[in-house]
Length: 302
Image (cartoon, rainbow, N blue to C red; front, side, top):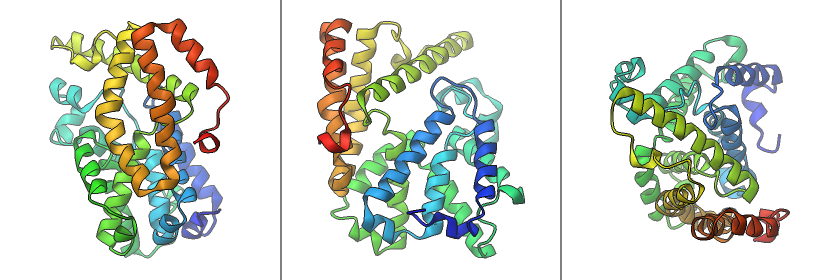
């Protein structure tokens, strides 16, 4: 309601309910890439809009709704494997999408098929030209979650002195929203410690299952999928991912949008130390550290 999203679909909540119910049913029961992950990414997209009034005012209602819905549908029908595995295995999806952003193309295709059904098309009250525009925005946003574009998003934010520079330019504003949905997708380690650890356990379980798929395929298991049954080794691998991928992105997000900085501070001051302690000193020491941060509130603490 605060974001005025209902204005796009004449406040017909049954449309939104019908669409989200259908989306929930399409998500597979993977440990990580499931409906809960999708919901958490969509929730973070709403946090960006609610906590940043200038961003909220600069983005049209239809783009805000596309941002939220793309976040909710960015992993539709995820098979629990990555693009590399799909390409190596020569899957039907890899062949269908010419081995380019295979999963992301599949996710957005699933969504666009859903809104062909009039009782799920929350954009049906827009002019036809606007519907086509929104469809392209949805495609671009979901494709932007492909990790192959990670460095592009980081570079775009690094070159953005102020979000106001993007607010005035429709092309740059779209690139900004594309970078933000990627940040939402990689926000799982920025949240409250216990939740961040739960997400880490889920992705580790999914990666272990994927390692088995590589073994069954008879190809070498990628390094990041190995030794995940050892908590201390896993903590080191998670730290490596955070340092090389999450921090370079989120430090720029926090700079461009200071109201999001508490999430970055939580990542640096709480989540990373947990993994460092677990890696260097073991589970007992990590549990002792975790207990001190069990009841902290991110936006009140930092």
